[in-house]
Image 1 (cartoon, rainbow, N blue to C red):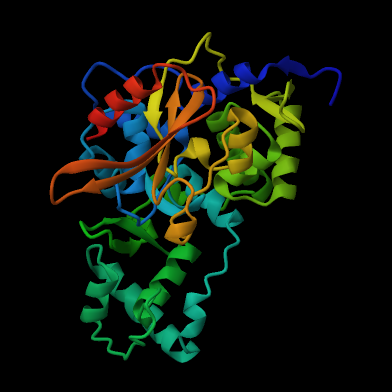
Image 2: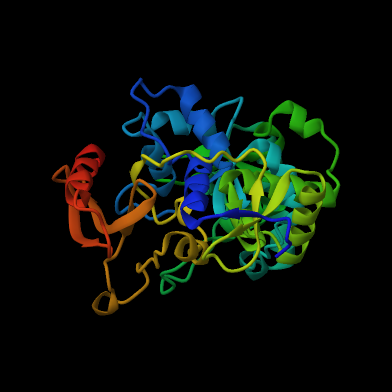
Length: 379
């Protein structure tokens, strides 16, 4: 570490990180407006999407953690109606991103969508032509509706319980990956409503020239660093799932430009960087149940080094081998993660089930009371 690095304690680094993520202070006491939801999203830069609905769709939970009781339709409005403040694309897995990041991510998301390779090339070309022509003259449509409109029929393998998609859906997902089509929103059953990307992006972004790859990476890493407050190259790269080598070069550029400064955090191995606009609050007063897909817990190594909290999602772990439960949410209190709770929404009975609760070593005496209040608010 350079001798010019600023020294931070682990507590200071935690407070910087929590402030950057909108989790360092108490929730608003005024009604939650569309503008407040939009500002929260802009602070986070992205929100991960996941289909698991055992508690709530994952993209609604980060807003609840930071804002408390709010109207979830406000999130839907930002992602489904022009001018969109949120749009879907690949980032930290499938995510809502800011539209201004779309072109940069399209350059750097090197995912290879293998699903379309299962469609014969001649059929694929024909379907692409039909799909793009249909979307050019229609409103946003689901894969199911597009299949019906172009009268595509095929037999599917009923024994395949996984991603048993027809060729239309596979081609659509490939076009989505390429950035040719986009999601104009979701149905109540969480199906994407596809549209040509130019019908989803704001006009000014459609007309913009293709970005320079190096500057695109710098912008993405700067956004990730703002959302972290303080972190390593690995932390920043993981936020948008960017390649490490190019991310390190972007960090060096941002240090050179004075946007990042090198810091040394006691007890956190390696080299860390702090964004120059990152604030250090005197104390952290937040309280929140964090989704397994919350951006504070994205990078598990960072979570353990910064908060001393080892965490893994056990959805795919056989039930007898689970240590804490199926859908476990970390419980943040102040600047510490003090407990974990296995939650399930029993929608038929309109009850929130806390199927297991585990406190962390050193959890304060008021943990149970604070958790009970948070669970009542969530319920």
